[in-house]
Image (cartoon, rainbow, N blue to C red; front, side, top):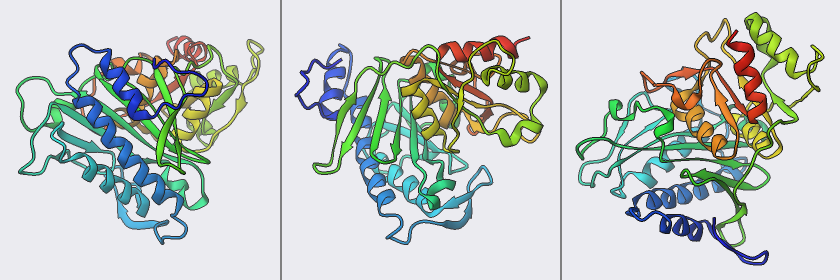
Length: 335
């Protein structure tokens, strides 16, 4: 971690350079990817903050590969990330939750050795009512010969991620990322346009006070899931009740629970028997961050980061957050 005094200012650029210096074989390419993502995050943050004034809120009249109505700001965020990342020579392909197929690097630009997967604007259905939304990203390294990346290159288990992070656009804009050297948070200072280190080496509590789950699906849960939720609420007398807090934006709920302790759950149900959230774009990157902060993530039967994906837009159940709370899910759902 960067050494600094209570009065020192550590920009995200300085922090990235410091972490890179600790890796003798570092080429600087991964750092370059993070720099480009920082630029994209600033652009999206600016647009989110002016959304109500810029005629950019509301539906765009199209659907994404998931069959969800795309918001105008979804499309802006997607295009912003693609244009910020496709020409730097560090990536060989990208994939977005908003697009059916992989996004190739345009002709004429160098192909790098990394792959970027991202959810450009998680929680976008909440845009029109001013609920915090976010961007989630995952970076993988291409195996084998250099050249254009393929879907097959991207189908790697989450434990092979080399970097992951998210940006939350809330009362302040904050970026949290990891390269496997802890999870660190940076808050955007709009007066100077820089992300500053505000949450070094984040550690989530072993047990948390918040439970984030959509109770509207309770009638569609299987009995083991219902029993698990009763346990979290203290209804079986085996633990103190957790406070239920659910925003409907995974980034928002995860961020609160990461800092304050707790569990975010999106179980499988009769309507979504394979789960609803995307393994590659949402669950893998957040699980990487969570584990780096001392937490855990499971699909109910195995560690999220050990799930071997078979398709780009694969869905999964997820229970993620404080290690002790996730352990309860693993125990009760494995019976």
